[in-house]
Length: 375
Image 1 (cartoon, rainbow, N blue to C red):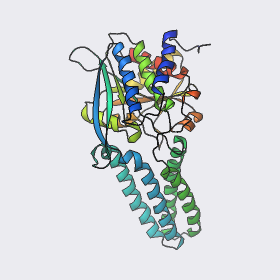
Image 2 (cartoon, rainbow, N blue to C red; image 1 turned 45 degrees about the vertical axis):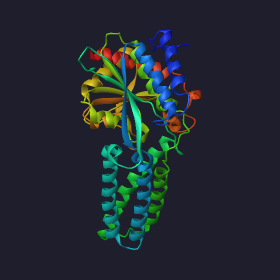
Image 3 (tube, one colour; image 1 turned 90 degrees about the horizontal axis):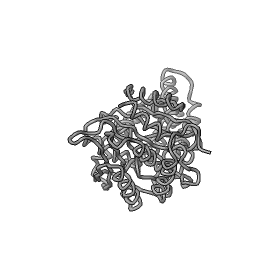
Image 4 (cartoon, rainbow, N blue to C red; image 1 turned 180 degrees about the horizontal axis):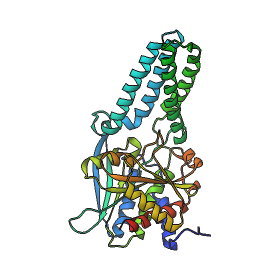
């Protein structure tokens, strides 16, 4: 039985599954033949819908995406261990300096690598291709873009565990800074440092284990987003002005979206990333909030009788909307799922055995109705 909310005719519901099966047929590392095959399939679908399709090659440094998170985890382990040693021996001021100075350096380096290094660093240079498709009046740009990433990756630990490690590390750093400051002021807190050090090392290991592999078919992350964009495009009238951007290198530091945002003028976009069959639809927005876009999504959800939640991006997660927002775009990311969803992402279990496409149809309908609401 089809879900009560689903206004899609049967051909569209069938298309959702067909797109998933073609895109998630194999792991799709950025720049790989498997990603190229998935991109060719998407290009054919979009051309059949009247889109003008082009490939947009770009170069980037794979160093931040492959090693950046792991290096931050290793740095956190060593600095918390050093601070713990100093605090335990009564050198609280030294512990505070290590944590404060080290935190500034690590956070500053992470920010620069994420924002600029992925395109500008001269090491580990690689090439990949974004797919751009437009359907607009001659000489004009689309008023809104639908965005999803094609590439996939695997990691030794699910994304939920990595995010937990990042949040735990940040919390432990905060506790360590407070303890070192109070100890410097005369409080007798040296006995807390072994516990802080052990907790910091364990949390740092979860972050340091975020090495990139190629064992995940990426059905959820992000064949589901690509399929959602394709189904939404199929629902739109043939004269509707819209752009579709299927990025590469999202799993390597948002490389494709960074390259696109650097080369293009800011616009409006709906990014789709991670659409499960179960769970709530979540609207993830950067700061500042794109108010008009959020209102249009809320209005469309109300018309469809679909429940949505909204909020900022959780720590430890990155999606293409971050790069686009940094480039001046008004953008949100749509996702759907629950804790079981994030437990599969970046693992070999992220395949079509646990994903059938009902969520793709639901979110595609929401995207289509949002575009109608926006006019």
